Image (cartoon, rainbow, N blue to C red):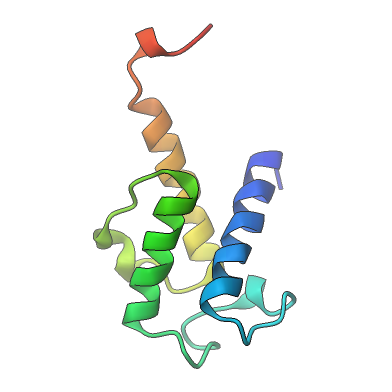
Length: 95
């Protein structure tokens, strides 16, 4: 993993730990809707909202159908961060 994806995974793991306190740190990277008893549609929305707040991004509820695992949320965050960065007008970027 790159430093950026390591950072994303670590921060997403903290979100999972808050929302699913019964999961051990070793279980979090393999967490999915099928493996976590308390993961329902409300939990998915909570994960998305928590990730938006944690990373200062907008994911949008249209991604709710895509987020079915820890890895899915990490991918959505990375993609949203890339899109958010690309949306910054060039004049606001330092060279």
